[in-house]
Length: 78
Image 1 (cartoon, rainbow, N blue to C red):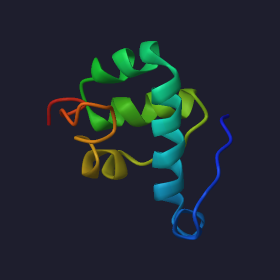
Image 2 (image 1 turned 135 degrees about the horizontal axis):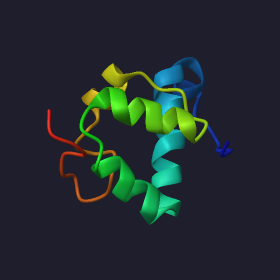
Image 3 (image 1 turned 45 degrees about the vertical axis):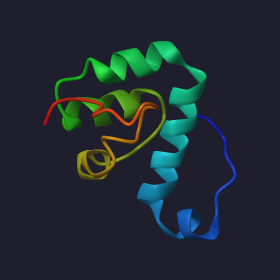
């Protein structure tokens, strides 16, 4: 599991903290970003994140799908 510095708001909001953690993983690993882009749904993306130690809900992923991976393109079709 990756470690990261959390702002006060992220510490109070587990979804924000998990999304921050996932973004950091994606920035360090282009292969993971490619696999995430290939997921067909937010459920599949949440399962992939869990496999990498990040517990995040499909709903939280859906809300930020356009900014999760650099380029601001949707991470997967909705």
